Image 1 (tube, one colour):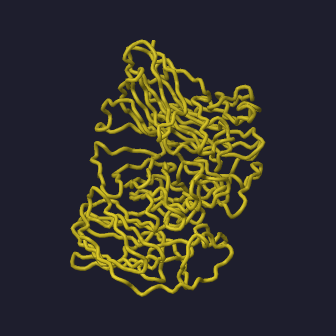
Image 2 (cartoon, rainbow, N blue to C red; image 1 turned 120 degrees about the vertical axis):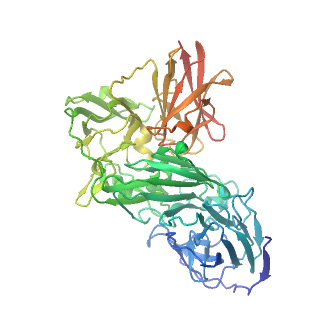
Image 3 (cartoon, one colour; image 1 turned 90 degrees about the vertical axis):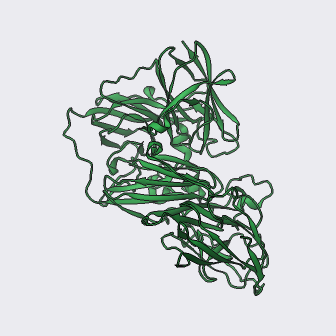
Length: 635
């Protein structure tokens, strides 16, 4: 139904004197007389009132002061929604209704600018039905909620798309959930948003030190909510990306089911034969994710964006980030991360039976070394591995670290020793293990037994038994780009009993960065494959070949990988994602074109090479820009 507008009382035009710490004041004029606080919204309470199948909600758009990084951080001047003039929140009020409900919303625009609204429509829809509310006016609209799903509403004051909103209007939006009749509503809703003052500039080009904040439900780590989950009780989460860029969201220690996805105006709930188990899932701008996971082990875990630039402490533009990597605090979770990170505390007894070892634990030595000038002129960091307790030498260090081939159900003890001149930690990405060994210094473990960073010369013995076969990785969990881009990462392949790793038909492709110099520079992308810019592969003709793709670049939220013979793509069959076998409904052969691989993701494909000759494995950015190419010979 077309919204109707009517004038409201004009807001006073006198400007409140703000603290010199407030950001963005000069960018807006005719501000309200009283600027209230913009509070975080944990999305646990539906807004409005519902009765007789009708939900009534009043939204007010106004200006407020927001501190997403705690009480010491700058006071950011933003537009936000609230149910009342003195209760603005980010995200905006949660609109949560049952399918079949009628929704009646009154929206009052107290801003000095026109407000373009989107997303207040019946789902599914072909467009998000934008309409404008002039400054100083209000609108009432009425519509049916539509089909169940995870959606959102949002607005701008500049008529820009979501990914180009300014800092001022970046928080104008909220979750819109339509529940099936009779379904439980105990799930959690997390809205990702971003405040980016760069968007006020004409060219929108990032510059060093630009004001920039990433948040979940209105707060940045370490001020994000600490989640509490229970062993044996399924956790159901809805995640909405209303920020300016894509985010690969990674859960430590557990797999989660991708139950549904959407784009804000449509939503797909997946049947069982199309439900993937993953540890990392990419979320493009303006998309949603329904996920569920079963906590099996107690301890502290993380849910975070795997793009280092979205969690690095250098995001705190208002204070200098610690740069002394010899200082263990740089690698501590409390001080060494910010942005899109949530802590999860799982309590209760483990539901994973402790198997009686059928064999003695396999002992491995894993050392971290530096190789001066490897990246010309930058130094490289890397790993060296040895069987048993033999110490390694710096000459054995490689980038990536040596391929670690393990057996499902075979316990391993890995003595990791830091032979660098700075502290570090190792995360066993995708491996299901006890929290203490997960590798987040200052956070992993349980109360009274928290994992420390490994100072120079220190060792940590990591113990786990891989419960499944697949493709995984190990990498530093230092919380900036420095160590990861320098080469402190490697691949893990876990085999089933009776399997052997045949290098003639099993091919690991690890995509990383060529040193740390440009790791956070979004205009230059020095990508390497298996540590080189001239990597080649050889596929065996006449038999299935397994190609294992791993993206462990610090900041490529999404890369596209293609495999072609000349201009024609070959066929490959998806086999696994993040080490978990894909369901039957997702294993049909497809053209090897533009396969998205976000940082922190692994994909396994089977390829039957068409004929002897040359294939090309192309790696490109989402915009089509080529970043690396691998020559593939078929013999």
